[in-house]
Length: 552
Image (cartoon, rainbow, N blue to C red; front, side, top):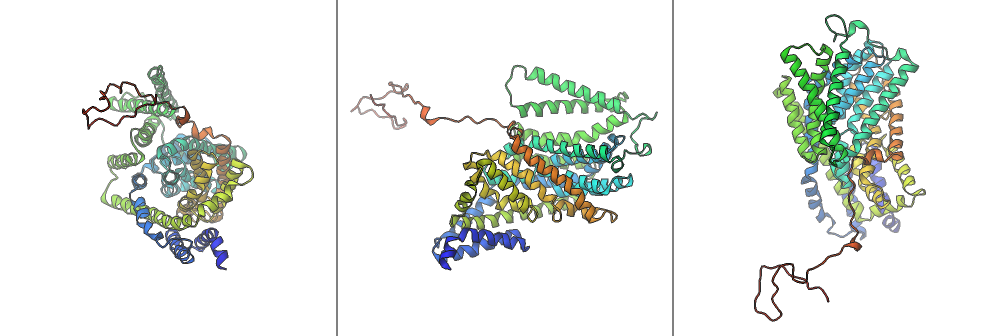
């Protein structure tokens, strides 16, 4: 029995941890308890040294002193302030009016607002609850199918998982030892593609089942001109002017420059946004009546969150700020926006601070527990067991990726993305790197896969969030069946990331590799301008650097 235990200590530790998690014990305490108990067993069996736990203080201090993790409370606070300041409500109402005449218009509005909230809040719960409270009753009132409406809301809320500034991407970068900024750049295009796939599904549904997503009736379209016109033409002309100015700026500014693609996109977009905002302010201030009511409303509602996105993601992408600094600027910007909307008060501030403190403590406790677990697991060579288990899979990289994605997809039925990130990613990352897989690409791929953990019936958290605010007329089965098509879309997105890796790596700079065999160092015979006294001379310069005399 002892010999069996010694030989199979690593799989026993891993299996015990998974079993306790499935039984419902808190993640942080399960990880820490398994690490301590099996650490003591390992010491008793002679597998581990008695000084094993002396390394714990240093490992825990490493968690507490990790400045990258400071981005989590900053982005969480920013999202909660924006969610409670009424930004989501204004966005949903305005974009809903914009797409109102189109079949499925409210569904398109929910998806676009979900993407914008993801880029400004990064918190799934805030996005799903906000859109569930505001848009679900309206969608049901105008005849939307319950399953389609609930599925669109839940899926759009989970875009906060993959669109920067996602919390899971911060944790993924930390666990894989990569830059958060690079992880954000890599996830940007997949996030936009996934948003497009959601909208494509809504479009296909409106073609096949037009009665499931009708257009808004004329009496519900309130943003109209006094003569009854919609004002869409004025908005289109404003957008054309902004895009034309942005393209012209890019052409003249970058004509003779070699600049990264992400810098061009960020700067050019910012120019277009600022121009549209300036025209709207000028039109309102001088009462020129060049813009319609719709154009003005869309501009003044969309520009503030877009400016906040530029303030946070733009400065990170341009290398001006670290993710932690970007999060701090985002939190400050959210407070300013809430103040301008006259929604900032002590009650709102206290709620946001309490929720931020709870979530941050939750993350840090899980990470501390994971450090205790990994100390014992790595001590018994558990990482080598995992490596041997995965690296020899048939199919090489493809076999590894298929196995890992199936494993993550199945475990997502029972574990959320925090637990998956802290338990699985540290074990899978070294194996992926040995197989020659880019870890930024691998992290984004896992992030897309883990997004399904919010949508899996029956334990998806996004489904629980929506159930808590949905009317009684919407059954739980409606929410579950509505989520299924979007889980399939997320699986398709995983396949697309594997099939088209450039979708992730296109925005990342290629690191120049130095061939050490070709490095040639020349040392001048004259000492490089330094007077070298002849042998035996008493002259000596104690401040001079030591010199290497080349062999003749």
